[in-house]
Each structure stands twice: as structure tokens, then as C-alpha cells.
Amino acid sequence: MSIKVRIPTPLQKLTENKVEVDVIAGTVAELVENLDKKYPGIKERICDEKGKIRRFVNIYLNEEDIRFLDKEDTVLKDNDEISIVPAIAGGALCTPRPLL
Image (tube, rainbow, N blue to C red):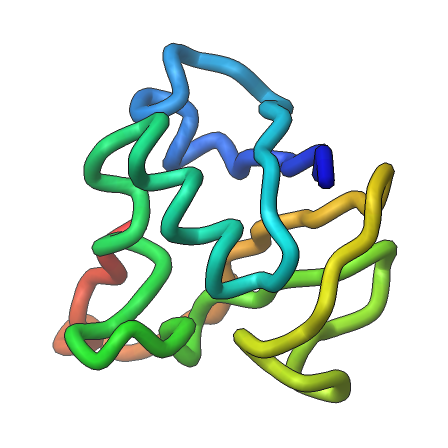
């Protein structure tokens, strides 16, 4: 299934400066894997060492947060749209810098 993925500005250097890419996948987890095969290094910025979506990365399926669906196991269908959105927050000077 072909899924359109919107790439945030901090990750576009990994997608050859593309704002949107198409990926074939049946679930969000498979989408991240296939995205990383096509654009190496993107998974480590989206996922933690256990392969789970980082808490400061929001992923939306057709404008619905996957955290309220089945998270990485959320099923995708042809022509779905995924948006990867890094969380934006203020903080103290000692706040760790996000990987995005």
C-alpha cells in the first residue's frame, strides 16, 4: 500500500530535501522500517533503541494521533497520509537536545 509521508524540516536532509515521500507499508512500524531502508538514519531519529516511537515525536495518520489508535501497530491502507511532527517545547538550558 502506498502511503504519503510528510517529513518535518529537521529530517528532510535525510530524504534528499523532500517534503513528502511515498512509502509502501501495512503498519506504522513497517512504514518506519521501509522509510529507513529508503532513507538510512531516519529510524534512529524517530524511534528509541527498542524500536518504539520516541515520546517527543508525534505521528499522525490522516490527522489522528497514532497514540490514540494502535501506536506502531496501527494498520495503514492505500492512500493514507502520515505526518511526522517533532514536539516543540520550551525548557531550561539543561534540557537535552532532541535527536531531530
